[in-house]
Image 1 (cartoon, rainbow, N blue to C red):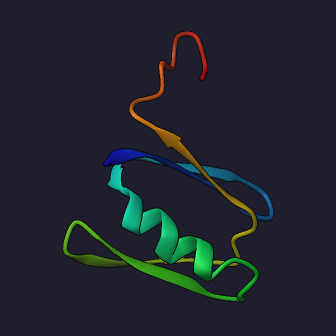
Image 2: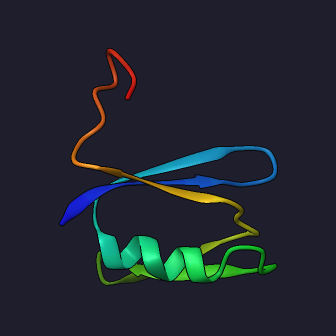
Length: 66
C-alpha cells in the first residue's frame, strides 16, 4: 500500500509522496528522537527531530487539499 507520509518538524512540514506504509512505520517509531533517518529510493535520508507523523493513503489532491 502506497501513500503520503506527513512529517511535522520544528519549523517545517515535510510531505513524502508515493512511499510504502513500511516507510511511515519506520519514521513513526523514531518520533521524538533527536535524529531520524530512513532509506528512501536506495539512499539514507536524514531528518532532524520529527513529531508527530501522519499517513494519508493514496495520493494527495494538491489543488483541493486532502
